[in-house]
Length: 101
Image (cartoon, rainbow, N blue to C red):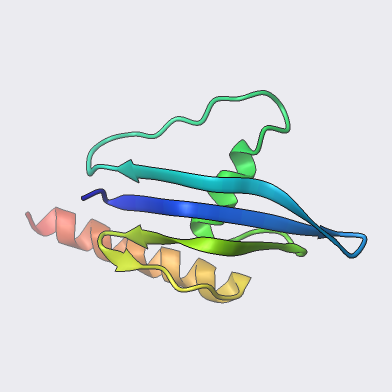
């Protein structure tokens, strides 16, 4: 099982009352101690993938389907401030746990 797992994530954007897919069915599993690199052309969606993982997408964008988990805990969908607070708390908690080992 990966530390960070995305399972069929689909992100859409609402542009002029139309729903446009920004990311379709993204899946990956990142094991502990490994690094995930995103490579692609300008506009390919690298930044949107990162923002989706952190659930800090710009207004008009939303995760429409799929799930993400961090350290086995499924991430709920929420607003930007709740997402930022969650990831900061998880990061601090992980650092404290690692420093005790």
